[in-house]
Image (cartoon, rainbow, N blue to C red; front, side, top):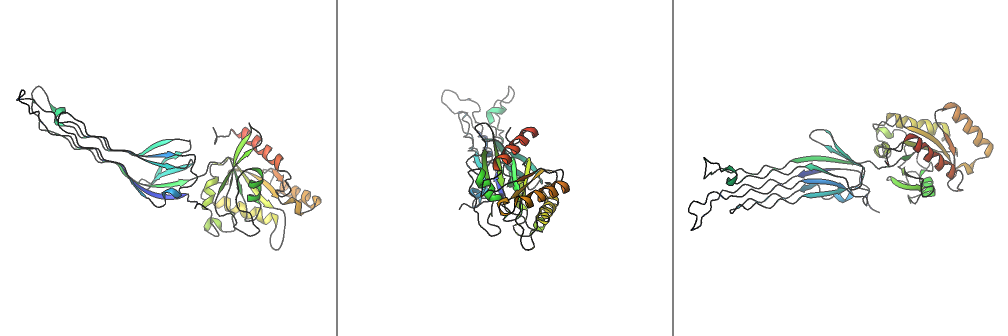
Length: 341
């Protein structure tokens, strides 16, 4: 399985401009031919470009230093040096680029084929022909090319999804995304089966579609690094709706109310500012309890959390999935669907 890498640091260096040439024409018929030194070439720049075929930064794992080509110096006969070759680094859609030295966001790459220059190539040097005037017929002045920009960058991938699944391990998130999309995360009866985020395209029909993200489960203390920590929560920062998946099957110390409170606490304490996101409750595995117990549970949740819509599903029995997806799509339309616009 391909490693999933969503954060990486790079050093990028643009090429320097080529130096201008100091030269004079020397021909039998032109004893005073004058200056003919050409300009140098422009230094190559470093670009980041989004590639829809990529969904991880793993391709950058073994190469952290990227350098564009330098411009060639000018030559006689007013010949300009070749420009340096640009360096293009391909990254997934949804990559945020930070300047480590300036400690700030440079750009958010959210469109297919979007290209941005992160290190500008150095300007070319000027040959002595440029400095010829009516009073200075034989200038010996040239300029060197300028050095290219260099930067230390941090690339952070935040998956582009309109809807995100959040919950405890084994809540049924992966089963849900497998049931409603073509995503194939691993499903098993032990915690942390999902160890990386997954994206799935949910298609109600040819016109109604949205993107769903599944992230690894949270446990108590995830915001302080427990379990897999909360670093995958950044992939939900672009979502418009969070579906809080909660298993209704209670056993041992597990209760539905405690599970909801625990995840809500981790969302509130997360550094990714998720507590203000629209959050709906999705009660999963409803085929494991009676209809009477389920209705009582729904009433209690609606009373305690009136701001949350509540849905009941069984991914195994394929119950309630169509109603959930239709409601999610309608909610996205009402909210304006900023991700796909």
